Image (cartoon, rainbow, N blue to C red; front, top):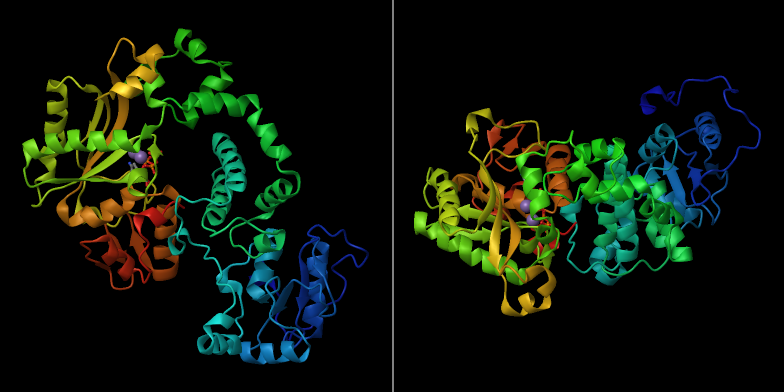
Length: 500
Ligand code: CTP
Ligand code: MN
Ligand code: MN
């Protein structure tokens, strides 16, 4: 890291090192001012030159154009007193930051997004806002999705759709880091209570890197982004999107087909050297149906079917919707159910019996059952993004069509009165239920940030099975989702607020 290489304040260092000529400004919307107080003149010069050499604009004076004030070693109260003496007031488009933001930006070679931890808060403002709540500055958006409330009302869809195309494109080319950066940027915008009003507002948000900001700016100014248009027309992107829309085909398989020159389903299906696995075979067989979204009405009809089957095995077991439908989505790519049994150990018998029943009812089109491999003694695991160990199955079932939708779809539905639908069932041990429900409710990014928050901010390990406290080396018990949020010192976020 750069920060460890920074010279200390006291040590004299030779001048030179940087080209003192006119440096090209790369980040025009960031104007940095370094507070000399406590930092010292020579270190300030050194840091200013360093920043300029990297394309940052550094102002020697605290002018009205300064956007990022950087201070080192000053107590917050002291700093703010001084800033106020200079006539520098609190303003929404100005950041007063710890040197950590600066050093991180230097090592990144670009201004990193400002996060809460970078700010030096004005203590007086805190007192004022307690006395007069109306004087409180606009509350900052958290960089963690699990500290934001994100409903289905997305007021920034034009931006988030574009950022998600970029994320998907990165995912298709195996660039996980940039993919996640675009997803995080989209997620922050999804959480806003209203549409972005101006670009200054965007600069105050966390998790928006330079690339994401550039896309938002384009759309703000031109109504569209040429980069996004380019991707949408790109042959590889289009082919990857098509192939990975098949159940059982991930980005790796899609890419290998693409590089073999295949572009259409017909080419894949007639290519003699391609052997589809069982999942992919079902994926193609039922593509027409399962590529269509499942509606909330269809999800409710399926819940009744699953409940009937579960109750046959264990009359005291209950079925709950998880996944996107629990978050209030109107449509999903599948329906996720989680089954709760009253006694430990009862979970193992449920799914095989449900599958048998669906078979005997002649509604089972595909099933992949995975027996439980859960063992508390092997917890906590450190492979957070891996699948969980609970008893689960991935199914395709026949759902009877409603009369009206049958009439609407005479072209496809004429010969059959059912629609193939993807269903996921999970049966965790009852003492693991809360963790499993939380994990299977999503969204994926919400879960990811919950785990990241637990690890980085609380020293705890969270996954679909347990919450583990590293300091005390203990598992933290939870029988509800609320218990887990409480252990993490987080405000409870309702399922419909987790659409991050
Ligand atoms: N999940 C999981 N482990 C799996 C499969 C899924 O933890 N083996 C979680 C995912 O992280 C997600 C939730 O289960 O949070 C639901 O997954 P999925 O059905 O893929 O996504 P949805 O959010 O339900 O989206 P959609 O409406 O498209 O189905
Ligand atoms: Mn789902
Ligand atoms: Mn699912």
